[in-house]
Image 1 (cartoon, rainbow, N blue to C red):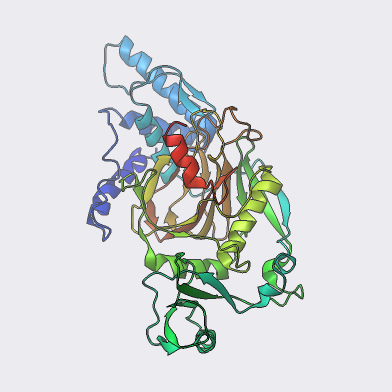
Image 2 (cartoon, rainbow, N blue to C red; image 1 turned 120 degrees about the vertical axis):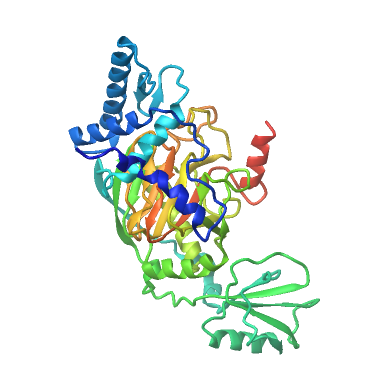
Length: 458
């Protein structure tokens, strides 16, 4: 027999996390409740896995529940107390059908086993192809798309400096200097107005985050496009899509992002990352990772982050059927997340509505993750109450939505299927680009406006 200790092995990560260079994250399971006979759950989980050949899916969860109910009945009949309390559960999604004081503990114990057992993703229901046709940026932006630099009013914040290039010069000289230097992404300077006279110029290795301000001027270097139809980033491509769940939808899209774009985004974000925060701000042992936001610049159509965002939105509209989604100002930034140390993880959580609440305008309706670096061991994504498991591969995109149908105000949304968790990292690193989708947002009424409106009860 396989010892049930394999499911509990994740618990020792708390000790390792305490000693890791991350420091201060705390024990991985410190916030959980506990039960003196929780080992019964692990034992039942292992027996059901041996019986069914898998630790995934409704059959496995139902098997564990049934075994624990039978054990409980026998123990009570014999006057014993050495059992794990259990009630009947619904399985679509996993949900107690009666009051259950240990619901979170039970769900997380099952999650541990799913994370620990096996290195295989849930098999797709079926696979199909999706043809992505990139937007015609030559038509959208005209001759301006061929300009080597994009002008923006505002400044580039401190950091990312290239001091060896800095100096007093005019715009023309600065563009020549930046164009010749591969590390240069742009430059910024202060002046009452743009005139071709010498100013103190500051060159930057990253020009993606421009802060609007009067009397400041920024030039962002961008890749030129010949508009001859040969640019690989703008050619149509066929992508394979695996359907893991139809409604609410869960999809895996293969080869969604190139290794070249992954390396560019990782190189720009990893040095700037700080500890990840949870919803509402603040740090929590519930989420152990590092992150940095990437803001798509829709004035720069060939920027890799912009191309990624547009491709993500196109998939949501064209393949998934979320036709009301539009990329552009008002959407949340893409959140680059890095799982760096042994034990880094994100415990079970929902990105949007997953309690069966009703849809309201401006809220999140879907999530997508692009995997640019996959751990050698651990770091899987598990949908906790659906028991669907994704073992990431570099270049894949995971998409899941919280809507059953079209977004109609007042209609009920997901009731638990999309609750998910990032399994603890055990070997290697994981880097993902997470994007959340909202309908009805724009520059004036952006995602923050709707979030605040909801928190104010309006």
